[in-house]
Length: 397
Image 1 (tube, rainbow, N blue to C red):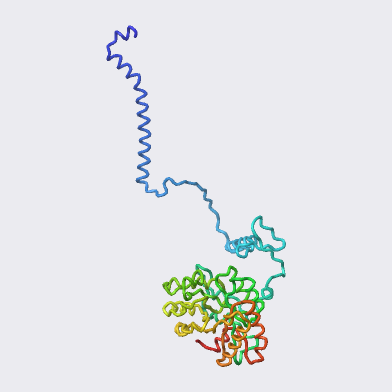
Image 2: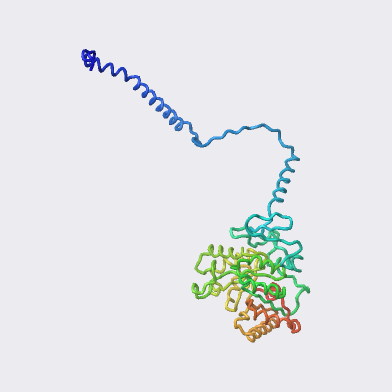
């Protein structure tokens, strides 16, 4: 401690030290006041500026004034652009690119190589078979499940438009309609029915096949009338289950109609619907009425499968739904003699009533016996006819 410090009073020393530190304190105070003021201004702006996008990223764009495009250029440019885009866009089928000679190959994924003039379906090379109408856009309705059939604005019904036209003119005399059902699941059996049976045989497709839409279209183009099968509650459900999306007597009408639309959207170009199972559902009037009303509203017909379903006819008539009933399946017994007897009984019923409808699966034995039976059918005074021709002769059930 120096002599000067000893001689100075205590207070004088403190004043000196305080005065030396003052500038630092004042600087910190000013900095704090500045930061606080900035925060206060920002808070006030956020509260009172009423800017809902405050804090969002901002971009500045320059806007140039241009003279309007002449009308001629406006009409030409979009068309040219769309044509260019269409030319660049690859043709696809079910999401798989179709490659033709001269097209660049995709770098990854599967492709369909199309050879000009070649096609796996004879009918598609020359167009639909005689009497097979194209699927009309006017008779399709968009839905969450896909296109659904409907009556066209001009009144045309799918049951009429997609009906097979008799090749020899109007059918006279007794007629037999034969429906081969359960198609679309097994590829070999389905192709055997489409390719091996005459166009007068009606083909019914299960909604569960992965290629059901393609098979149904091929059958239609080959001249067959087609039906879509609707899964319906069988007896002893659920131990005996028709499959997913089955219509159930215990469900509300709205739920059953959604399930019906799912099945109807699985294919296009069919004349009507037929049950897949359905013994229990077809005996519940309350559950059946809204389903039949929906089918009638869409211009379809309905084919009941067995004698046990006979009570549905009155409900269908009330709904305005054209309907017919097949007898017991002709291949209920997997023996050639039993199938031959069932076909003979079908022929007898046609002679007695004017028309009869038979129902069978596409088993190899059934297809073989049908081929042998129909060979001499005309000589016995009976005509093999599509379902719609037999229904018109038979009338509603």
